Amino acid sequence: MNKIIERDRAYTWHPYTQHGVEPDPIAIDRAKNASLFDVEGREILDLISSWWTCLHGHSHCELNEALAAQAERLPHIMFAGFTHAPAVELAEALVKAVPQGQPNERLARVFYSDNGSTAVEVALKLAYQYWRNRGEEGRNIFVSFEGGYHGDTLGAMSVGTGSGFFNLFTDLMCAVKTVPFAETWDGDEEAERREDAALTALKTVLQAERGRIAALIIEPMMQGAGGFRICRPEFLRGVCDAARQEDILIIFDEVATGFGRTGPLFASEHAGVTPDLMCLSKGLTGGYLPLAATVASERIYSAFLDESFAKAFAHGHSFTANPLASAVAVRSLALFEKEQTFDRIKRIEQQHRAILPELKKRREITRSRVLGTILACNLADGEGGYKSEASLFLKDWYLAHGLNIRPLGPVIYLMPPYCITGQELRRAYEGLFAGLDALASQGL
Ligand SMILES: Cc1ncc(COP(=O)(O)O)c(C=O)c1O
Image 1 (cartoon, rainbow, N blue to C red):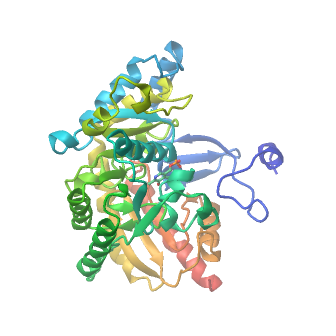
Image 2: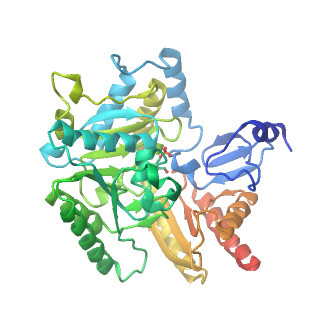
Image 3: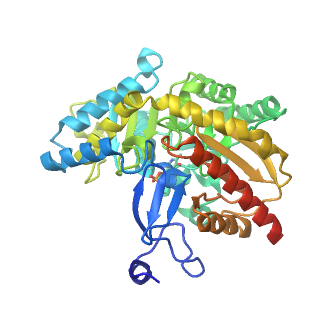
């Protein structure tokens, strides 16, 4: 066993890991483009972009350069009472980049924090305080979706109970009503019927709780951790129409779907809808550094303006708007144009779609689907949980064969960095199928 692993075993505690039974982690020494290299020099193709964060590729020379230049100038400064060019430039770039709706729904203000969960906490707190600041006291319920996941902090867990990860913590959670998400897949003929049923259920809740709901939160177009569940733009539009009808705030959690993952820069663009609050993180810095942004509408921001501090948003983190992370994020956004990233995204989507027929031929696979750079499918008889025997077998098999593919329970997915080559993707598909063959030969 190498020394890093030995020391890791002695001192660290890993996320989402049962240290009682799971194998040692792999010690990664370096990474370049779509590849990770372990301390023994073995290459692993990163087909899930390091928990969906890496956009343009690992150790990108431009991002390295932006980081080094900012480190020379200003690594950190608190963001209350101070500001700095990278945070301002990034806020400007984000406001220009996010989809915009009616004048009073314009997403116009960026509140920074440092991970996806905090971006969601901020959105929930802003939504709640928005109504309080306007003198509406009773709005303390959030509406979320079955299969929705929004992070691991308390508020984010509350709106993510539909993901099934947090049953242990229900006593600690805030009030949430969970409604069905109209999932669909390639060749699905029941999508409209499922949408009608889900929208009826949503409207029933919105009417029953009229005046008590602060906001609705949804991962637009695709639920990530809940199982890469995709919906049609029609469903997202229906959800937004229903929420607008009842005058509740809409929060889009684009932590996973943002920055091109589903095709356009933001998934909400598929449906041409805009929220009141938008949560961003993961790909925001191209996968380099922890940074998050909650983009709020002008309507929300103005409800916090007052002569007294009582209406201000009393929330902040030590590393809010960290200059290193902000500078890298600015450069990462600029790379979309410089590297013609949307062409790369289209090429990945085309390659995924070309493999769909082969995937659909497999008896052990069901519900194949593609959205932008994401290819996903379910194990046909895989009702197992997050760490089912089959999913653990596949994860280990793929790693042993140089592929970072990490099934989420019965869901197998690829979400590669945009720099991945056509040849690397072909290697990924071949490996994916070979892993399924190995699973079948185990009788799992
Ligand atoms: C949609 C969504 N929201 C929020 C989060 C939480 O982000 P973080 O892990 O950075 O706290 C995630 C993480 O996977 C996510 O997929």
